[in-house]
Length: 111
Length: 121
Image (tube, rainbow over all chains, first blue to last red; front, top):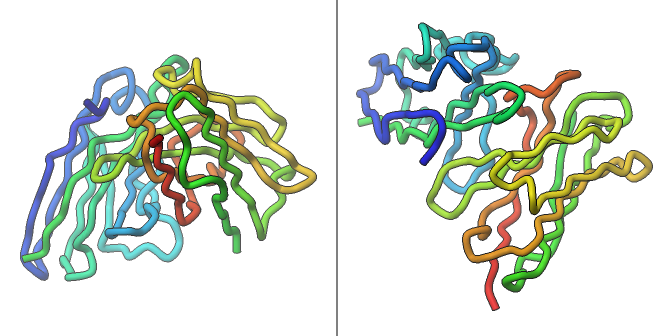
């Protein structure tokens, strides 16, 4: 069982917006502004989409945004496109004992 | 640009030690940052294994700490992973990645392409 809880799957139609949640505790997500999100297409390495909760690396579309409220971080994808269909993972710093934890992943289907 | 490439045996016998190397190009490890290993069992999610600072300081996943050793060779611009006493549960795609910060963070970018390691007799 993963330390961070994500929905197993979400779906949306092209052009719509979806949000993927990532729920942890005050010891990880809620305690630090160090949450990152990764996109992974089948057979490919993960790609960084968001870091430090809401910062977007250069080259990542501004359709991707991140936020956090309490112990839950969220990734929002607006204007869904077919190429957004992939698995998405959240990751958080979890303090000096546990250090780094990932979520279980969410499969995004673009209908 | 920075590129990472994993290398090592694709098949390891149970109870033996898994050894992988990550070769970095386009950036000198000795210049700084953390460097990490992450794995993904077939059909499952990502698991952080551990990270090493360019100076050699290491941090490990507590669940794997007793079996993991990560080391760095700045002269070869490489860092390595050793996982001892492997079982079938250690079968996974192993990724290396850079953490572009001077302290441990969950920010991994870029990643290597990954290498599948199967534990089987």
